[in-house]
Length: 103
View (cartoon, rainbow, N blue to C red):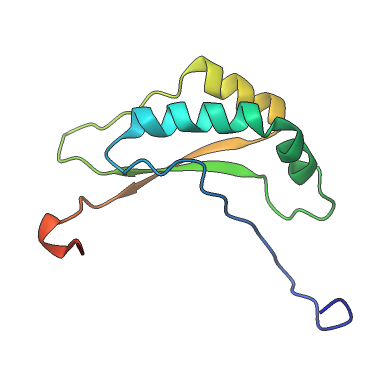
């Protein structure tokens, strides 16, 4: 509604990979491909006036039962994100329970 009440905040979420939380390497490959294909559109979104927060690329991963969990963002991805003005984020989620999955 162009003449209606304006929201104080807005946002956009775009799925760039359909890889599961336990397949971080595929998420990375899919994301690099997505960024390369859509770089011009992403630059426009990042420069959109009125952004309240730094645009970010958030990777959802499955939390493993280990003493230390670390994941590596390859230099190619980091460089692409830097050129496009995107921050990198990593969100860890509890492991899925196969019994809870719908078929």
